[in-house]
Length: 208
Image (tube, rainbow, N blue to C red; front, top):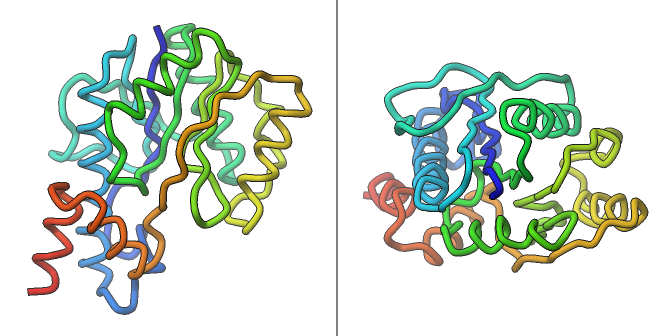
């Protein structure tokens, strides 16, 4: 059975969702980040997996539900931190791992279960994002060379990451494309897609 890893930042004003400011204030952006993280944690918590891991930059707070193993992020660039999260989770429990961020509050346990189940007969799982990146990556076994050196936050990050998996000869299961919340327009779109989420509720409250 697979495990799920969330890689996230502690939702502190001025450190998260800075591309939302403006139109939102740093405190409002942090509130939206906290809501998105909460939705992601709920979806993971509802998914039957061997282990739930939070690879955290910062300190856990009252927003963290029980049932998660917290590990610190390691590495300088995002490519290194993703690679380290896979390796560290695998050391804790040598099971296939599905990794997501905190930017897709519309994620569902059904999608996460599909990703986890796919690793039983595929080497990798890949969820592309509308901004050219990716919202999910799953690996049957950690391999830092699959991630290190892939340029992150680039219009072709997703294509380059998928090319890396293909060149390694991995059998990849593709998931539906989702939108990461990076901009105010993204926030409105994602809230409309998941109107019952904590994220959508928080966005509505900020608009009142």
